[in-house]
Image 1 (cartoon, helix red, strand yellow):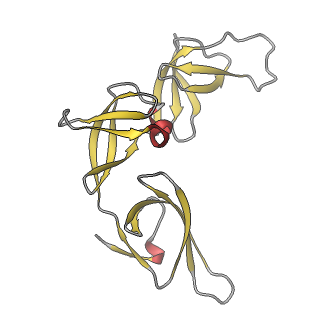
Image 2 (cartoon, helix red, strand yellow; image 1 turned 90 degrees about the horizontal axis):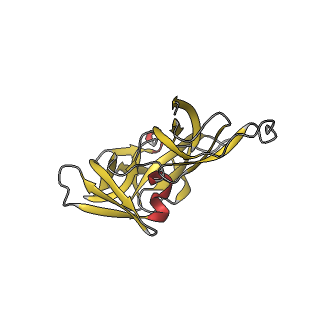
Length: 191
């Protein structure tokens, strides 16, 4: 494990802070008047998902977290948890609580392969593609002249997720979604 000084803690790195794994969401080094430089960071706890702001000073160091990756297959979700199975060993099944996994599994179809980050051989968080293609399960018909809402309507995808899309999207269309923002990006295939 590499030791990082305060100015090497950059966005995207995964560090040990208070013996827990955190992902650096943002890092900004600045100096206030005659004081020493400070690295103001936003960290997301990789197990709980909680985001905290931490300032690292010039004399502070942290270690990189020892993170491994595993390919896993998304199986299903119920009201309280989402279940996965390791791709190379399907008997190795594990789950994530729904409150920490819902924003990611809402974009996954059963049997989709995803990347799971592990810390000390325990599954920690799910990495999904930035863009996914999903079929529209239910789309209300476009009402002529209904452009007050910006020409958008709310549709339901086959995974159960709901997305705002342009009025020309119909049931059966396949659309591309940005999983980071949850926004419609384009229609891939017309029904």
